[in-house]
Each structure stands twice: as C-alpha cells, then as structure tokens.
Length: 149
Length: 149
DNA sequence: ATCATTGCAAACCGTTTGCAGCCTT
DNA sequence: AAGGCTGCAAACGGTTTGCAATGAT
Image 1 (cartoon, rainbow over the protein chains, first blue to last red):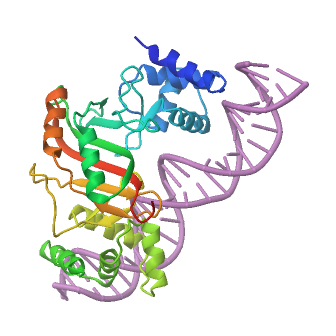
Image 2: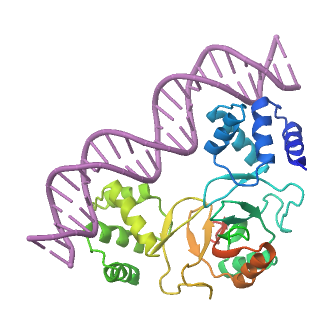
Image 3: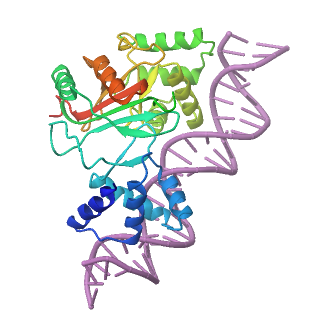
C-alpha cells in the first residue's frame, strides 16, 4: 500500500539526509493523505495524532522533500502532496525536471496527478512558436470530481 | 500601441466602476510593461514615476482588474500582467473562464501569453480519463527566451 | 564525537481590515 | 448630493531567521 513512506525515506537516506522522527512523521502523514495539505494543515494533523512537529521544522522538511522531488506543490493553492513515485511520469523530456500535472476538485479539494497525452507535442509547438528553450511546465486543471458532481 | 489602457478603462466603466487617478496610473503602467510585476514592484515603479498610489489601493485595484479579466496572475511567481485583450484566446471552451497560458523566461522575467494548439483535446482527454468536469486550466511554461539564450 | 537537524522566540514580509475623508458620478 | 474609492494605521497570517539544545550517524 504505502510504499511511499519507505521509498521517500530511503531516497533521503541515499542522499545523505538523516532519518529523524519529524521527517518520518511528515512522510507518514503524506503517505496516507490523498489531498494536498498546507504546512499548517500538516501541523494540525500531526498534533491531532499526538505526533507533534514544530512549524518551522515542517517548513524545512517540506523544502527538503520538494528538492528531492518527493512532493510537489499545487500552484493554485500552495498546498503540497506526495509525488506518485511508482508511475513517475517524466514526459520523455529533460530528466532534470519532472512533471506537474494536477487535477484539483474545487469541492472536496482532492488532488490527483494526471497523465496528459500529447504534452510533448504541445511543448514542442510552444517552443517553436516562441523560440524559448522550455525547461519546466506546470499544468493544472480544476473542476468537480465524480463524487462531488 | 497601447490600446490596452483605453480598453481596460472602458471595460471598467462599462461595468459601473469609476475611473479614478489611481486606477489610471496602474492601468497605464501595466499597458507599458511586458514583464509581470508584483504588487510591490508596481508600487515602486509608480513612486519612481512620481505617480504614487497607496499599497492597499494597488491590491484593491489589481483585485478589480483580475475580476474583470484585464490582468492575469503568473502562478509560479504570483506576479500579474495585463491580458492580451486583442487576441484573447478562449480556447473555444466554456466562456466563463479564459485561458492562462504563460511562458516565463527565468533569466529576464519576461512573460508572454502563448497559443497552445490542441489544448482542447488535452483537456477532453484528461476529463475522460478522470471523470472530472473540468472548469479551469492553467498552463505555465518556463525556460529561457531567445534574447537570453 | 561530530555535525546535521530540531525547537523556540522573535523578526519579517506581503496582504488584509476598519474607518474617516476625498472625489467621481 | 451620494456613495464608490482612496489612504492611513494597524492588525494579521504565513514564512523565515538566529541560535542553543538535541539526537542520528
């Protein structure tokens, strides 16, 4: 089920980070939460679970997780969610970046990662049209999910 | 050249807003600036030009302009830029929303609106795949523009 | 034992609110 | 003349910084 927590922690370990209780707590929470969470929401949930982590530490841990591409930010809300490590979709592009294709339900706040067929073509077209060398792209969709409709 | 200022102000007027000096100043600045600007940058530029507008008013004016789809926000930076009123690209989708297709140069900060061929198909595919009713989409690309390369 | 990491306090910054006075209509 | 809009002051909330204490390696 939640191979995420194990995998995330081993990525950190492999990168020379220490496995600490606060980091475990945050990673475990992210592993079991499908919605995107704000730093404050993370703090509250951890407090409620009796697994207190200082606010500042949460910020630093999230920063660390983001740098290691273990979480990604939802641009429209600023909240974070774990990356889908299994089917990490690199869009067959530059490997220095990974994709951010989010689908956000405005009713329940649930966030999914989605596969976007033909993104490569879109990006190529935009590059040609503009003369830009494109390095990153963020696609974000919002609407109402099936449950909420 | 800058039909933007005139057009933006007349849109406001048509919607029952008053044409005030602060609004004119902000709109004029946006008309002649291709880069996206933060509220603070707007304040500074206006001050430097001897056209002071209070910080709070800038926030309120930007809010008003955004509601009337005269500016749009760059999600990755939070800055705002005038909408391209001429070739407003509504993606042949729901008219309640307009598109946000931004191309940001990470070197000079310049922001362009781009046309994304085939976005409709992409959106349709995502909708089918997920079961979401998609209402809005934000596409943002960043890289290096021709000048900066 | 060492040094990365945490927790606390306090500073910080951008943004928002309340309200009196101004200026467009 | 009326009320939308502005400007000031102050509050606000989320985020960041400095530093001593803790704890993983």
